[in-house]
Length: 435
Image (tube, rainbow, N blue to C red; front, side, top):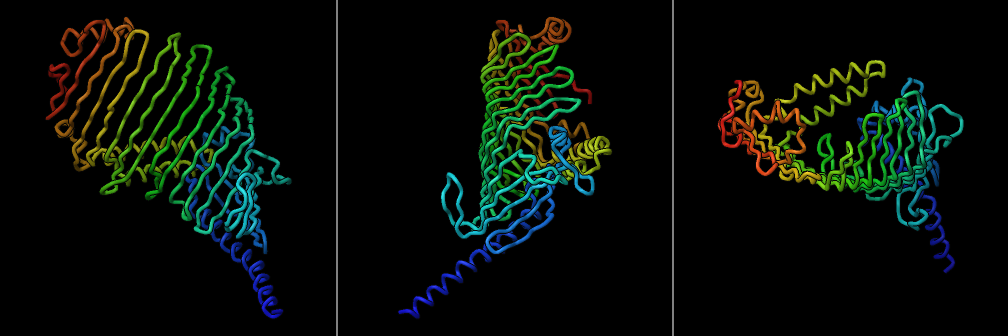
């Protein structure tokens, strides 16, 4: 009996010692996989500075370079620089090896490791002195990761603007190779005031995400809601309440992408008028994934340019991106605004729009007569005459009414627009085209 107890004790010791070693090795592999795959490109670039694996815990350090110019400006004063002059932050990771991990509010679970993080400006002496975020990660045995993010209030100020980012809480789950991601979050918003007195305020924002990576792109669904947005300046103000956005995208034959976005809002206050509610549904189908991936590559190259060359790089990227337009349009693209409705004090704005471009050779799109022949258009709109400025009505709208292209009926301006076989009509009247 004593011999069996000694054997059991030996096995228990081996398990206690070997399990953390094994999970430590697995955690290190998963960390380096994250660095290589980097799901945050092109906005952020990840670089491993160190990984020190111990028996029951490990430590790692990652430099996060902020490549997006707008994000760099928003975090001005909060970013450090590495030895190469790159702007970013250091993240210190503390990995507690599994197989048993504990997280407050979640209890004990089986996992490779639980990871806590400290964030600092690169090169400063005290880790964690820039406590922007609290991050907790679990590395699971199937290779997936779960991440909890909680941010504190962040305030920045420079000679251009003073900005305060309100607290954020979010959670994400990814697979081993960062090819799928699910998440949700709640952000209390932000306020910003420029040196010219312009003010921007966002409040009560939530999102849900369910996406997968295809090639270099993320496809799936995202739902977004926002309580309110307020913009004020010395000349004008704009307030939007109750904004909801639902977007879905998927890939089908020949790597073509279909995308649908539905938008609704409760109210807009602008120029002393209260408008809404309103809704919009738009679908864009048969977008070639290869062209979008090239657009992403163009954007990434521009972001990789040194800050001193950033303006020129973005201009060059815009010219290069314009050259992809024929390829984007050559696979039978369909643009469909199925629903456009908006209430105003003077009546309802209503519209629809469906454009089909037949599949063709990209070079053929430079031939204008041929391009007209492959366009199919079915559109229409109606809106209260009171919404049209008087000068516009006299100089632009009234002549079109007299020619029969537009119609005014019961103080409503409306028209039906068709194009087929190279012929464009408005209200059944043929509209001469220049080519």
